[in-house]
Amino acid sequence: MIARRLTIGGRVQGVGFRWSTRTEADAVGVTGWVRNRPDGTVEAWFQGEPEAVERMVDWAHRGPGSARVQDVEVTEADPDDTLSGFEIRR
Image 1 (tube, helix red, strand yellow):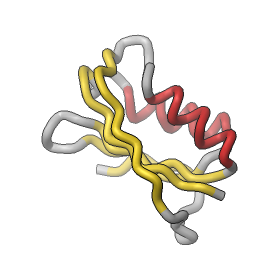
Image 2: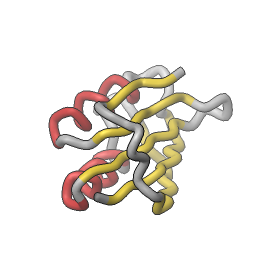
Image 3: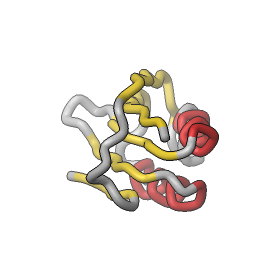
């Protein structure tokens, strides 16, 4: 199991990014969370099997159709054993 923390910039708030992220994460079987940040970026945590996490990282570079992703910062992290499922955080 691996984990990645992402900070996603561009036109990513108000376009369904968090909802779409949860849908994609559920489809590929990763756990974690996603939230809007006050600076206008979206922050996400993905963990699971390496292939599934990498699929989510690739997806985050595109996002949903209405988003305009300009940059994605990816940081390796230690998996969080307390997480189950994928949630949208405030």
